[in-house]
Amino acid sequence: MSDFPLDAAEEITISPRRSYMIITVKGLTKKFGDFIAVDNISFEVQAGEILAFLGPNGAGKTTTIKMLTTVLEPTGGTIELNGFNPLTHQDEARHSFGIVFQDASVDDELTAYENMLMHAVLYGVPRETRQERIRQLLEFVELWDRRKDFVKNFSGGMKRRLEIAKGLLHHPKILFLDEPTQGLDPQTRNHIWEYIRQMNREEKMSVFFTTHYIEEAEKSADRVVIIDHGRIIAVGTPTELKAQAGEDNLEQAFIKLTGNVIRDETVDPNQNLMRRFARR
Amino acid sequence: MEIIYILWLRQIKRYYRSKARIIGSLGQPLLFMVAFGFGFGPIYQKAGEGNYLEFLVPGVIAMSILFSAVFSGLEIIWDRQFGFLKEMLVAPVSRLKIMIGRSLGGATVAVIQGLVVLVLSFLIGFHIIDWWMLSAAVVVMFLIAFLFTLFGTAVASLMKDVQGFQLIINLLIMPLLFLSGAFFPLDSLPRAIQAPMMANPLAYGVDALRGTLVGLHQFSLAADFTILGTIIILLLVISSYLFSKIQA
Image (cartoon, rainbow over all chains, first blue to last red; front, side, top):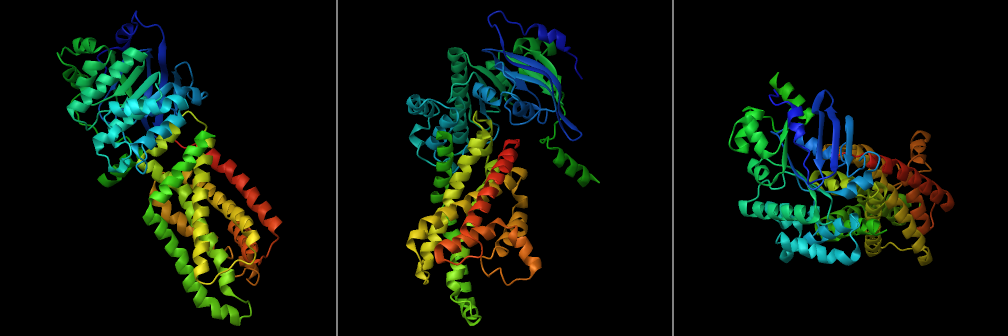
């Protein structure tokens, strides 16, 4: 499966302008029963880097993000986030990152402003700066005028924008984005990426993101990790990956590396089981 | 402290914004008071037990608190379904604080609900014997409410989806309710039924509520408070452990 040995790819992870690793993952594994969702993966993210974590559906991206963000316990391996082990120093690790989940994590019954305020309190954003920062971010995602509306009345795109504003509210050192721009129009996607890149530049915020829009990775990522069937199959800058695959755009390179087979949407082992039963 | 407050506030806001829930959850106790109160009242009186409404109303208040509280606890399943649970799970605060904030909010809502039922009961002829005891009754309401919110939280922490919800209501909550002495006196029942009643925390809640509102009780108030308090501490430990083990 892997035509591109990891050792070759790993050499280029050392870049002179950055000094330390903000995320270090070694031998990370997650099993659900017999199903191995993430299979002994290791990688590093440098401080200040934008890293794209790409893979077909069911490759193990979300499971990896869940383990990195302390909501899922790994079966094996170690994780270091901003120097903290998320298993033993949960709160310190949690303070270090912000996350935009693949699906909703806002409360529909609250207003946009109340959701932001809730997040600010949970993350200990100082009282004096709260209002100002919430205003700034809501203005940025163009939801300030709708701040008093209930989230349940928002469109899908508005909810995504709110999620992103929320993830950025406490100025985290690491921002995890699990398919942040899924279902958004090109204008909003562009706008969001501009802001993320700006935060990356100005605040030295490291970004770890997954996406199915490969051009986003090509445009914004310093480095790309490709995962498939729970294993890392390629690591490198977009340019390097294109060169490795002998393609002139990253999407083609991605398809060449991961193959043409269309994947099952789900990694839920129970559903796979159900399907197996159904086939009988 | 602020974390507990904001999660408390969230429960309160969700409650008063959901008018359908308020009306729906008041309909049931009102129905019980009217139907049972007027239906069984004469029989109860003929049996020489006195005024049934006096006996029934504290039980119905306890019932509405029970449902509201358990439901608040179980709301975690909905939070999981709609995603807000993740927001709480990745936050850099102890899950104990989150759970306490939520549970206090749920308990407060349940107490409000209980007080509204009390007010409604005045309309059909219920009266309190000693107004000074009302504050003690509110404390009892809070103990029942907090206890069962924690109970709901513990159960919800073990559940992945809403499929098991009906099961919980029918196999756990209804037996707790019917074996609590809310609707009929416990002391003249067969031994075999009395034993599980003694193990039912709601029985002590109903007893204390009846004691404080109308002066009828089977156990001493001190015993009721001690038992409720002990179970609350036990449930605090259990549910905070289970809640801390939730994975997304």
